[in-house]
Amino acid sequence: MSKSSIHISNSSASALLHNERVFDVDYAIDDKARNDVYQYHQIQDLVLEAKADYSFHQKNNRSMNKSAKLIKEAIVNLNEHHTIDDVKELCKQIKKEFGYEPMHIAIHRDEGYIDKSTKEKHYNYHAHIMLLNYSFDTHRTIRPTKTTLAKLQDLTASSLKMERGVDKRISKKVRLDTHQYKRAKEEEAQKLNYNFK
Image (cartoon, rainbow, N blue to C red; front, side):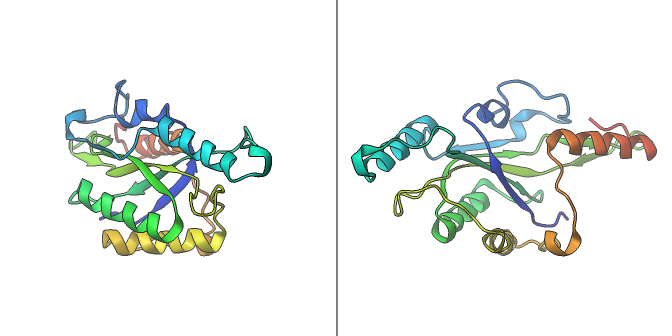
């Protein structure tokens, strides 16, 4: 059983190509038909709505700074039994507590690695949640603090009924991006005589 974890980073609408498996990925170990997708909003439409709202509430209809990051992506650890409804409930709680508007969910059940000696598949169950990083209440982008992010980890564990991972401030672990993680797993697999995909 995986421990709960959620990580939010900047993203773009093009992440949907990966999330919806428009193109095959070389680390899939199963059919992409096992994945689930749910869309709340058209991402570009909601981004334009946020920009218009921002301008409307500024003096002289000032435009939003071009460097503003309106699209965030949360990657959430899951276990095999989690459903799209579980992730929708998490999204509902995240919106209520932190203000992020969910736009799109993709659950990936096709990634992982294969044990070379036993041929057993080990899955990396997770969800990608595209979020609008803008509050229509405050008419500003959302700027979480370290305390807010720790609360987000607590909420995720509680919502998904998973054991919470060790607080980063205690473990001192550095989160790896996707490519770093894959490279680390490949090196680990070679040491353990696994065939990691």
